Amino acid sequence: MSNSHPRCDGHGINHLTSIPTMRHAPSLRQRLRARRLSRRDGVELAPGALIGRAVSVEVSPGARLRIGACARIGDRTRFLVRAGAVEIGEQASLGERCTIVAHAGVQIAPRATLGDEVTILDFDHRFADPELPIRVQGLTSERVSVGEGAILGPRAAVLRGARVGAGARVGPLAVVKGEIAPGAVVEGVPARAPGPPPPRHRRKGGR
Image (tube, rainbow, N blue to C red; front, side):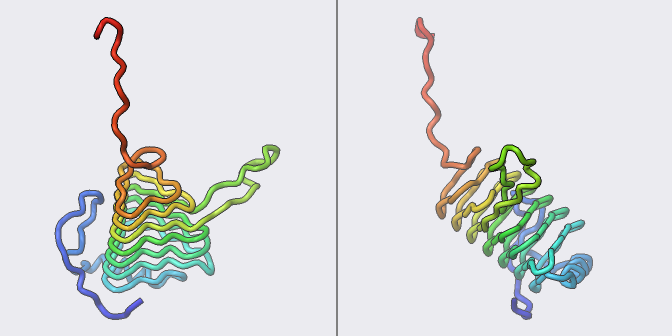
């Protein structure tokens, strides 16, 4: 990542999150939080990144967390990077209390927005053997990506192997599996494009 100090333009409040969008330079407290985080093993922090209060970071040996220039990380967001890399692109915005857990890797592209309490998991538990407890059968993992300028609504969940295309919009509380096309608008469980309402069946007698 570049050591230059980028200009983080823009102003206002991102209404999917509780954090400001690219307005003023980070405050002294924000700069101190960023400095402390950048000293952690496995963490790479670009200039201009804003780190919220009580952000939790656990990076296993050999894994990486990279946060790009002018990215915003909301209060009490949690990163658990067991393997691979979690990459937060330039000017990406994560709301409060988001959770990202990686065993293969997670990429959040530049200018993507995650609403408050979004969860991203790149793994599942194996459960092929019904005679064994699930906890001893291990994990299966696959990289997750969120494209440039995509927006994930509050409390959405993105699961193993999912790919959210650039500019896509994912509704609140949606659960994303598989691939979401660039520019698509999806909602629900599992997330899909909203369709027309089902036809209403009239009762006998015309009522």
